Image (cartoon, rainbow, N blue to C red; front, side, top):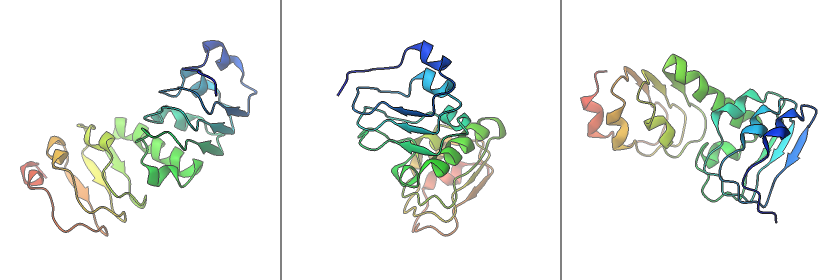
Amino acid sequence: GNQLETLPPEMAALQGLEELNIDNNVIEEVPRPLLELYGLKRVSLAYNRLEALPSDLCWLTALEHIEASHNDLLEIPPREVISKGAVVILDYLRKFNRAKWTAKLDLSCNGLTYVPLEVIRMSNLTQLKLFKNELRSLPSAFGGLVKLTSLSVIDNKLSVLPPELAKLQM
């Protein structure tokens, strides 16, 4: 493969570009110019070194296919979400963008087996819905969500809640 680490800024001018394949490179984060290709319908980023798909990817509303497999460090969004395809990925990312402003996040019905780290980092969250997932536990770091006033974890596989939840002002 190539050894691309990013894309040149001039690529953002290719507004007619509908398909982009940058597989088999050494890209660690989605290049900024790609996030400005609003006509893009298909993007493949497989076999890179991505750790996250940025929430700004949700603004590429024409995207119909996102391939991000074989990025062994990829954690955001969780693999359960990525495996469901572009529509679910973009919806997930859109919810995070919205939550930055509303402080409300609904990740229900995503098949999540763990609470994603980016949720725990959202210290401004007041409302969190995680119902109908596959969660077996909640992280102790939930205690850091000090503004949380509403938490819904209905229909998961939880057997215990972290004691840190008791410290929250819900």
